[in-house]
Amino acid sequence: MDKTPPRMDPRVLRTRQLLRNALIELLQEMEIEKISVNRLSERATINRVTFYLHYRDIPDMLEKMADDMIIEITGVLQKTPTSSNSSEEELPALISLLEHIAEHASFYKVVLASKRIPIFTDRLLKLLSELISARIEEIMEGGSRSTDGIQKDIAIWYGSSALIGTIVSWLRNDMPYTPLFLAKQFTLLRTTMR
Image (cartoon, rainbow, N blue to C red; front, side, top):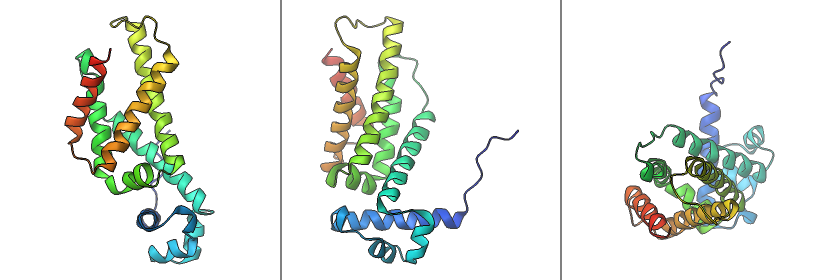
């Protein structure tokens, strides 16, 4: 039995991309509360009825965009090769994540840095927490590093908050460092603070 998901109609993808781009443009100009379906549809150069074929309302659109963001990031991370060097295992994944964010900077600058739309920050924080939790489990099981006295939940809070805070600051400062340099700096910080 074939388990490949059915391909989405290119017209649907194009319409959703138009709406997404229009929303990001409008968010650069005004607060989310001031954006109406009419204004969004007009900016996207589509009919208002077409918007309702895809989304119930703007909060539903944000919810689906946040879902798409997590699917995209997860896909990027799954394609990332792992390193054999235990001290640099996280580096390729972190580089891939930062490259993805840099590639879609206009989107991430708006939803994470300038407007701080909670659904996007919360979803990304949840994903990062899950990734860090899995990494901590590996470290604890492998016994390669001392974890004496460190509470797992505190380590997860610290790691995920530091990472998302670094990403937000990087975006707010117009990404002055390359993804590779930032990932290496983050890794160096973590190793020196142990």
